[in-house]
Length: 421
Image (cartoon, rainbow, N blue to C red; front, side):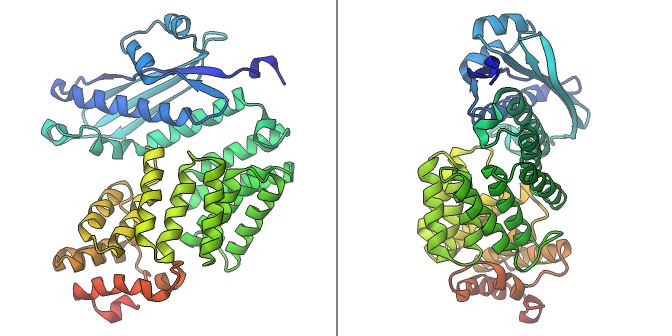
């Protein structure tokens, strides 16, 4: 191994500089957005095992500096991440750069442009980052994924991730980055990269476990390439990942995620607990544990693991909000379910599943008109949506558990014929 990779490298994430030439009154809001984005990146980078991330309290003291040499020297950092956000009329222009102390060079940089037009300063006086973060979600995802991948390649020896084959490792990182995007196109592209990684090194545990999760997600969403035996295929890759590295927490998580949808609830719970034992800070393992409790009918027990997942990972997947809403829904806390589903729909407005669950919660709350509106929007998103089909694939221990969702829709006078279309 190269001596340069023997010791952990250090990175300082500086606050992004914010300017607002079009409206000085909202400059505080733009700075809040800038700080939120920098903090999210800092949290994600801190999860890399080969990297030490300097604390926010230390790095944010250099808010107004452009002298990176001073930052390198005083913080003893190998890398510095900096950038800027400019508000221009109805858009934000965001520049982010990764700088290296070794040769004083910029090793990665990207410019983003996203729509942004706050209605007024008052919209943000309580929580200035909530609404703005919605527009920035794709920027955060792309930035964090690109930088994590780059630093993985620059810092961590491939053997530390279960392979000494650099080609396999590079293909795995590309597949992992694509898989994190959670959409149909990236899911298919990620699968090709992960299959290539396994072909390059058939003994690479992490490539098998990520492919397992990829296949399970494809099946659950009925994306391109799904087939009836896909969950069994996913379970096979997870089991192989465990054979190759029994201490790989992601492998046990992937096993839990696939076997849950095969309705083997106790086995799924055991695998989720093993993943958490191996890595107590593994947010996805806590989430799948909560999901397993939910579909087992232990709705109260589902809440704590899901809240843990969201606490551990402030950059949590929006799907966690939906599953937690399901738990509250089945506990008859319909206002709590409604609030979570509305938050999830702000992040993922095209979720027909969340709109249907929200419609049912609103039915129980006596808000018939709003319920019918959400149901119609769900059908606009997915004209082929079928309650009968959804009931058949969701891994409830007993299919009758789903009846509560149907009951809420019926309370809103959504016809049974329409429900079972």
